Length: 78
Length: 232
Image (cartoon, rainbow over all chains, first blue to last red):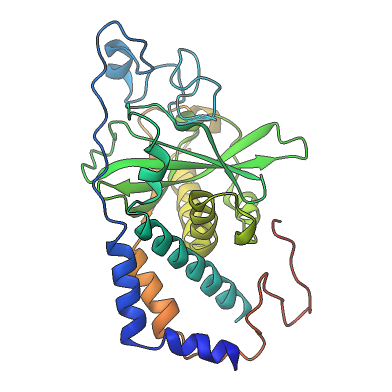
């Protein structure tokens, strides 16, 4: 009966409205990436690498490596 | 029916997380970025997120998408641990996030993108977690765990498409060559409609009888009378 009571809460319009409001309240504009200032350490690949692949030649851009986007590593690796 | 019950529980946990995010006027990505300045290709948080009883890790980042998908802000990469020593991780799936912080797509990438071991779909799917969400250390961890559990079937479908796409490109090539082919980035994807999924399962399917479930969690399998451990 307890579970049926829980089900009633999700019964109809209340459930739909709850879901819609819950999602809407999480819609927030995400920040754009900050510009990399010249001379600052950057983990982005250089232009030559970018020309070869979107995430750097010789790298795995989205792996789990110790250092993201470092030369010879996987930028998307752990 | 049991699987449906598990999925419903996962989606209820997702909804609870959304309400909690909303109360804080945030979302999963903003929560991760709150102590950082966002730079392309940097990982957030820097040490990654651990969830699923320590068997899963994830991070968020953004960079130009080779798919030219202007709707994406960034994406999570989700990795599962391999072996008892937890010294090797395999990429399982990515979750694309739009500029409003909403999940829009599961996707699977070629091996060169993430590095690490390459496992076929049949070996990855058993790793998908359905943990005890109350054990997750934080809201983002709980949300990620619940999302992976709730969309387990979609993730499995993405991995199957990935394998099919990969196999179709072998055509006399060695697998390692295809895995390193930088012209192949995203191998499969599947859209996420979170609102519709929540509505369909939590509201429209809510009247379906489930006499074997007493509302407890983790969910007891009525056929075996076993309660599965938090993680496979």
